[in-house]
Structures are given as structure tokens and as C-alpha cells.
Length: 278
Length: 297
Image 1 (tube, rainbow over the protein chains, first blue to last red):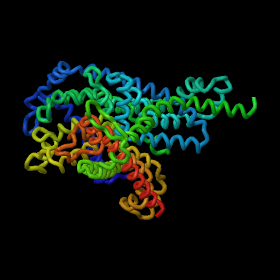
Image 2 (image 1 turned 60 degrees about the vertical axis):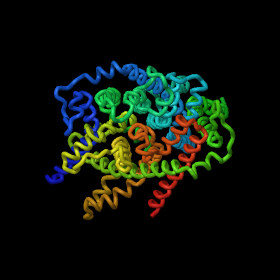
Image 3 (image 1 turned 30 degrees about the vertical axis):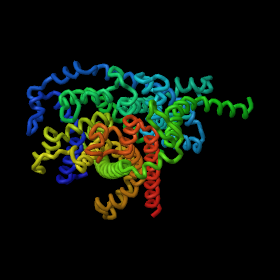
Image 4 (image 1 turned 60 degrees about the horizontal axis):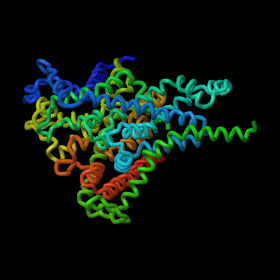
């Protein structure tokens, strides 16, 4: 098809704007993270640091157990993801064998659960955490994160299992595999893309969670990155060490940025598969 | 083996397979939800210890005379309507762009998804830095473009603080809307649009008369999801403005949180959270109702 040059230029401009809108705020942060203090507080702003400095990262590392925050976040998000998949996969296997009406009722119920605002559950969960002596324990975050991930994980896995040919499952049954054997040996391996999508969505949501992490941890060494960063700032917005904060922001977001850039297809597929097919 | 026992076995199998999900959701969602409703009917008094007693509707009734609650309600409604409006508009535009074949579309798709995946609380801090009154990027860019004479203290004035929150929220959640709308766009048969083109409909007319009506279900889904999440917004407000200046950006979620953890008024915090949830349900019903009426027309 022949393109008018004006339309092509408009399209290029729109693409540039969309990319800039998505990237510039993050880039500004990354630049601040390696900018010497004198350039951070210069008006008009110095955009590109010269020379770039690792001072803020070093100061952050000395002042805060930042590596510990990262390790806590990774451990908790990973455990929550595994627990979530371990619960969601059997449920998805059961749902995809149900009659459509019963199945849709279940899926709709899960959708409603996913719309529940976490703030509503915060205080009762806090009471439970206190009662069980789980303040500062990773378990206090792993269980809720796994539960919050369930609706989307079940949606994504169920859609993946349902796409598998019926004959495969029948053959597995004839070979004497029970429901668990079918799940582990047949359904999960064959629906690997859906499993990846569900795992990524749960991991990212758990890594990013803030409200419970803020409320259920009091010890600095038990904090996840999101709660830990809130404690990096000074007493007020006006004595904030912006260089260190930017370094913290970059370090804590880098893992998810990489996941998105590598797995964009899987993540988008999982997100929209859940919301649109229903 | 008879058909009857097979069916029973299948049913028992299904129950077993669903048990882990049900247990987790009961522990983390159902029981706490019942508990917060119960808590809303209690009165909390601070004596030597925190004492709770049954109060019937008295705790709920307190919201009516509470100016701070009404202010939080107004802020929540304003934040939700402005951010959802902006996100759905930008998200639709972005989806239309991503739907067009262009060089580097794959890379663009990945790039525009990045904001969605970043932690809201952390990026709220980043936006507070962007909207910093003296050294922030927003003032610098606007001054360079000649749009701003004097630097603006964005987070220090009620209207600009709310605007800053809306922009930050839109940045983070527009990709989600775009993905939903893009999936909807890709479900529109190309032949329909081609037929309209042959019939002489211009690009604007095609969008208005064909694309938009066919997109309506996707737009409703996106609006519904976003409105409900936005209504419960906590992270972004807590970090960026703390509800300030002077309570002008305090949302219901923030007020409930403060009631629980700062004022130790557990019953009242629960009443705020529950009333907020009920209002969100009404809001969702209105969106669905409006959409279904449009569809019937």
C-alpha cells in the first residue's frame, strides 16, 4: 500500500511520543541516580551527569541493608509465586473439565475476588498476623501474595489447559495417570507458555506489593524493597537524599524492567487473556 | 465400575483439586472480609488497653457528620474520575497506535508496557522527584518549552497536587488499558472496516461509527477494572503526597489506614473501608448499567 509522507511522519511522531512518555520519567530517575549532588541541585537542570558517579549507590549500600531488601523481595515473591501456582494449577485442571456453566460461575467468582481492594482486608489480616506471631515473618506476606495472585493465575492456566487437545488427556488417563499425574506430566509441560505467564504476573505483583509489606514488617532487615525504600527518605520531602533514592528506585525496578522486556508477549497475553476472553 | 461411582469419583476428585484455592482464599479474603464488616459494627475505646464493644450502626453513622470523611470521599471520586478518564483516553490512543503495522512495533509494545510492571509505591517516589518544586523534571521541561514562567510547587497546592497524582497514576496504568483495548481492536474483522472504506467513510467516520461501538465491551472492562482499583488507591497517594497538602488529596483508603494505624480507632477504620467498598459496588453497577444501555441502543 502506498503511504502518504505526511501520514508516515505523523505515525513516526506518535510512536516517538509514546516511547518518550513511557521512558522519560524512568530515564530521569536513572540519570539522577548517577548524577553528582551539585548537578542534582542545579537550575536549570543538568540532564546528563558529567562525570557519572557511583557515590549514591555506595552511600545507599552503607546506610541501608539494601541487598537484604532485594533478597527479601526476591525470596518472598518467589515463594508466593510457587505457592500460588501449586494451588492454581489443580484448580484450573478441575475447572477445564467442568461443564461450561459451572466453570463460568467459578471464573466469575474469582474475577470478583480479584476486584476486592486490599485495603479492605488490611486490618483483619494484620490482626491475624499479630495473633499468629508472624510480624516480620516472610510467611505474613507469602500467604496473602499467593492468594492475591490466584484469580489471574487460575484464569490464565485454565485457558491454557483448555486449549490442549482432548485426546492427550484421554490418552494419559488410559495410561493410568491420576489427576495429579496428568497435571504434572501432561498439562503443565504442554501448557508451559501459560504457566510462564501466570508465574510472571504473580511474581511481578508480589515484588511490587507495598501496603501489606509496609504494615506487617517493623524490622529493617525484614523489609522488602518497596517498604524499605519508603524508609530511605529523610524526615520531610525537603531533606530527601534524592541521589540515593534514585539509586534505590533504579535498583528495585531493574528486575521487573528486565522481565517485561524479555517476556512482553507472555505478560500481555496473560493479562488480556484473563480480562477479555471472559 | 458403574457410571454412578465414576461420577462420584470425578466429583470427589474435583473437590480435592479445588481445595487449596478455597483454603487460601478463605484465609486471606473471605474470613478477613467478614471480620472487617463485623469490626465496622464495633466501637473502639482507648483506655489502658484498646477495648472494642458492639456499637450497632453508631460507628457507621459517624461518617455522616465527619467532614474529613466527606473530604476523602470527594477526593477519591475526583481522583477516580480524572484518572480513569485520562487513562482510558490515552490507553485507547496507544492501542490504536500499537494496532498499526509499523517498523519496531514489537519493541514499542515492550517499551510501553514497562510502566505497568513497575512498583507503584516506588514510582510514586520517582514522580514526587519529577514534580519537585525547585529541581524537578516537570518544571524544567515546561520552562524549556516556554510553557511556564515561574516554577510551580506542584505538591504544595491542592489542585496541582491532585493533578500530579492523576498524571503519575495515568503513567502507570495506561499500558493496562491499552492492552485490553488492543485485544478488542484485534477482534474487529478487517473486512468490516474495509467495506466502510469502500463505501466512502473517512478515517474519523470509520472510527466513530465502527471501531468505537465494537470496542465498547473492551472499554467497559478496562473502565471497570481501573475505576475499582483507582477507588481503592493507597500506594501512590501515601507516598507522593501523604494525603496533603492539608488533607486535600486524602483518599478513603488512606483515611481508613490512618484510622487503624495512627489513631487506633479500629472500628471506625473498618466503617470507612466498608462504606468505601459499598460505594465502589454502586459505582461498578452504574458503569455496567450505562454500558448495557448503550449496547441496547
